[in-house]
Image (cartoon, rainbow, N blue to C red):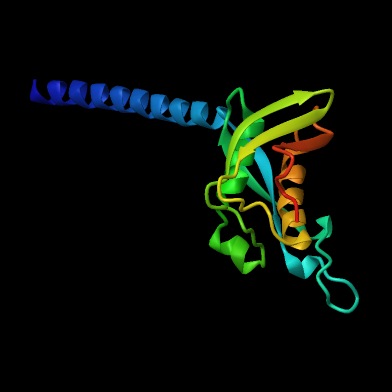
Length: 166
């Protein structure tokens, strides 16, 4: 009789364990479905040099890195916020990829798309988006390239208009 009870217990244990394993895997699958891949564009000056080795400060130096973000109703804003957080992996840094982001105080406050033009509104209380033309151009290019991956975005404008000016 003890063998029968033990066998019954083991069968129940296997059934419950299988059920828990199934639910766990379903939960993980659900989480993966709720994420999407996006690209962030950072900079590698080694890719942006002319024949004499001078940095051109052009879009040629942009490097695409892949990230996963949660699926939300604001993917453009989520992606731009991720870009300006400036989180590069050690591997990306070892490849020569750089960014000046994050910039102290810089925050995205809104985004809207109309007629294929994305307008991004930022708050820059410490004027960290200004500087030399090379620097601000690269900062601009990073945001622009990141934003243009989204359908319906052909141009990017910034508000206020004095942002990203030399």
